[in-house]
Image 1 (cartoon, rainbow, N blue to C red):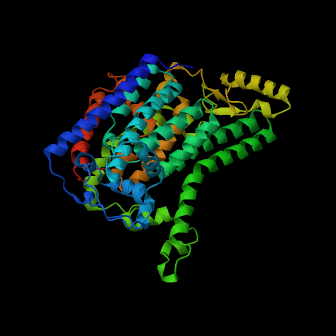
Image 2: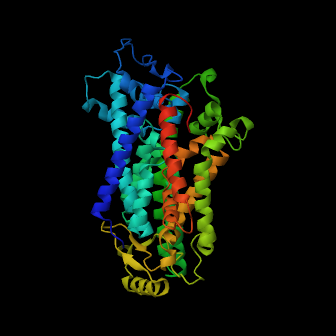
Image 3: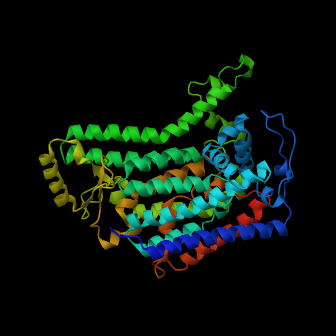
Length: 484
């Protein structure tokens, strides 16, 4: 397995730090240069549960950054979930702000203190997310040069303004990328914990259970058709189901919390319509009722500018998926199960087994030998006792390494699903930040940059796109103008 380089990790950390400094510098510059479109974000009525109407003067340099969804996150951290629409914002960021803010500069006014804590948390989380991104990329791509280039692209991604603002993107990125890194490293239980926490930061974190399902699907196939072991297959299904449930659990628990607060103990005329549905999902109701989110509901002529705004990121996602599918059709369309071509190991992605749970060690070892002979793979045992050991593909041909590796398949499938959802269901302009933590975007961009003769000028276009959106986002977002 390709090892990460200490010098490369230093470059990653410096790139992440420098990119945050750049974004903050641009925010301050554009705040001084332009006047905000809407100044209502600075209004801060007292909490509904508080009788204290005294307001301290809030430091303007911090307060000016509390715009758009940042208002909700700070309000929730300060007052809790007071209104129905606030339940659209998941609790991890507000809880983190509330937990860490008392340990910081207590002489600041409360709201300013909360905002400062949020800035610190998100920017530190982004640096750590970049480090996890690099380590994950090295394992999957097996090429440190492409991995480093992809990570630098991530550090200067088009949605950079949101990673340095009071949004949940940074926490989601560090938890999802960290979870995936530990997942492909074989530390499945810790990976599940991080992926579950990512679902407390953003709702799409629950979709990370798809990686567990993908692994489970391949492991069951291997247990049944290679090892001929039904007991092993049943065990794999149970473990996979439990791990997937753990990732879904935080989001489901938050929906139950919302139902309890908004529906239980209410008078009949106070009960909201969604409380009476067969499956009362508060999140879906809020998205539809307050923001008009729904299948094809955004396909209106007046929304054409927003589709144009999202077109670069959606185009990159589309071409990354299509290129992978055209280059590796057997792997892509068979979901990695095809073993009829020259690359016999292409169907075994994230395959793992726990040898210690079975008494028939001899038969299992013989099966392992057959697997090695048939798939030409190398085993890597999990250092965590009692967990499952991962079998990783190491013998792919050089033409199928990097972005075209079979190990990239589940990431490409995940990106395709997210991109389709962003285009067909969501407010499409949100796609820029919604997809910004998807590794295949940067892997594909780095891959085509590695072949300038085959893909001329694409590298310049990608860097120009990132630079333009960093500048545009710093100008518009910080001054309360619409941007993704």
